Image 1 (cartoon, rainbow, N blue to C red):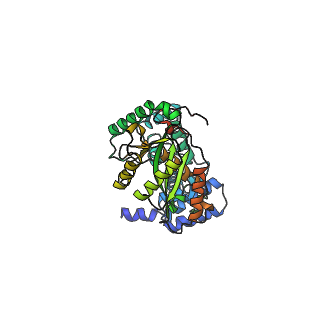
Image 2: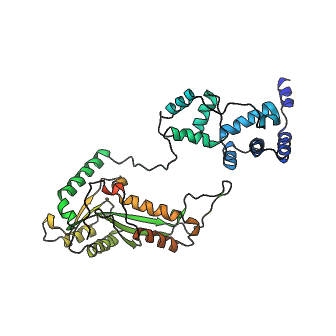
Image 3: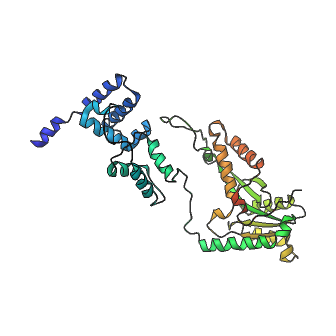
Length: 359
């Protein structure tokens, strides 16, 4: 009997929807319309996360508006409705900032819950929550992958080894007798064109990608002294192409010995490549080798500054994602950026700072 009475007291969803639509059609303030739309979508069965995306409002606001409507009807959606407070006291503000220092990664919902249920504060705009994150030194950022197989002690030891080697050859490096090159391969995919752009909140931004499997491999070597990138395109990364690229580096470095630093890719260590290096250095003492190779520690790409160059180039082409019609055009833009940019960033000198001698 009690349950039957409660069911009779709660208006049916279609009645609620009709009432809210009538309110919306009466052309109230835009802020009131947004509240009514949010509550209407709730009663139409939309998930809170979907409403959040459609109206660009916080989940906490949706919850507050629904509660206000259930308790006070349309009046609860009016701007003069006095619901939960929309501010923190100075003391509460400092408490929240201190709380936000307790861990490194946060979800917006955690902050919304904290403010709503501990301080009785709900903001209508997500911007207010973002301001709190910003005040606490927390920003929206892309995560980076960390290979758990990487041995940080080995990485640190290898870094020290490279630093010592470069320092001991400083005179020859700055005199351009010994050229230090950091080598890596990059695989450009058609799908790399997709990224972040400014667009309408309620519309998906689709970029035409005819064949996601389209791929172009690039070998690149950045000069540790002057930041110049030596780039060459290949159909794949393998022993044959590695040898061809090493010949290209020799041609680009007349009267210089090469100190190459790269990762432990299987084709870098293959018998074909080792035989080629043996032929090039045959009969010479190690200090006179035409090509001397050193490997980075395994499973840690961040050791190689050229990774930042690939990232810069891919970030640049994404700015024009809506304007690139074919994979051929994508490759042209990627190569144009790499060939016309002189790279100068902090990680490029991670193994020691050298004086560039202008020629």
